[in-house]
Image (cartoon, rainbow over all chains, first blue to last red; front, side):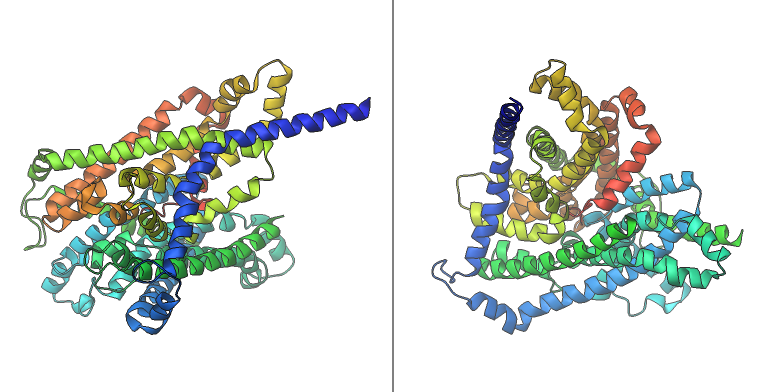
Length: 293
Length: 284
């Protein structure tokens, strides 16, 4: 009797699961139509000839041998590295200052940081142009006073782009770092002090090991974020600076120089790279979680 | 004492630096001319007048709103029940949902747009529908993260079982009990999704460019013609963003809002959500 009942409930469970699965149908259809199928077709296109038939690895060879294409990867890499290094250092300073302030200040700051996270792309590029562009206000002021601070600084160069990126990297970094910095318990510090450790020893042996995985994980997120940035770069330098994102876009949807097969191959390489980055990041985030447990 | 001084100094400096572009854009939008001298030569509202009289601007706002709300409604109808189903009845499918949180990093917009363009350009499917489908995908991380957390908080499975024991059908239990309980999660997810959709640029520009001029595309076009006009667009865009966000928060009734989580906790959860979710990646 008991066994029968159990069997019945297993069958009931299966029925419920089937019903629940059926409810997912529209969701799965959307995923297939707008994510899975397009990605598969893109991968296929990356192995196609210029007339969209046959199988070839020529597109990949072209990207790896012609500077015009592989330098896009190099430029994106350099700008992302520079902006995420600066971003993570500044974000750590802000996060540390944040957890030291009053709870009310912390709450308000988090809302403020959320708001600033929306300030990216065209509006950000535009603000930087009127501030430090060729006819920017700061450029003008400094040249009137006679300080050559901005001499040699060009907003439309890769340094200018990196500086602009830092602006959205810092708030993003703070959002990711804040929980880890909050996790440093005051009592740990007191305990360490009681046991005779100075502040330096505390940070070296307790504080840093605690936040390090999350700092590294956040750094990788910032890096990935900068690599994927398109709008800010497009608005600021168009395609004057050869970046992965703007290059792919120009190859795929450009009017004159459209080479969709090459663009697809570049997009596939880019996606593989980004997925690898995300997997590394997951590894570090898991370290953090294990530490917390 | 010294400690708290140095941290408030860092925070004030940070806030100041973050506010500069906002303020600058605002002042630029109300000045007659700024560029030949250090201070603007005069103040005016002419740029706003000129902007609001431009039918192309109004059309771009309408287009952005249609795209944003059309897709958001589709997301709410299709994604919310799916996430609930998966969380309660299909724990095995859960592991396919988790990676979506990192998806905007793993599959940047430029990559998805490439795939979409290859698949649908020249097909009978209108590209505006494809655009809507593309941004739909990028709403998943926000929706999944916020609703999943909320479901765990209210112990959804027990709630559903309890209401069924009391004689409610599954649909009744879902609509009358579960939905009101995950209202905050849905609200937070919608808010993040909404601001991402309204600020969408990348996929729109790659798929349709000037053929479907949204606010962001209009902004960029005007930027190359008149800086003052363009800053008026930016200011209007942020006002719109703030206003509609406020309406979404208000629409989720205040009473239940306070009862269930307390206001402070809710605002905090919005910020934490952003930190842990994949954030505004479509925006930059």
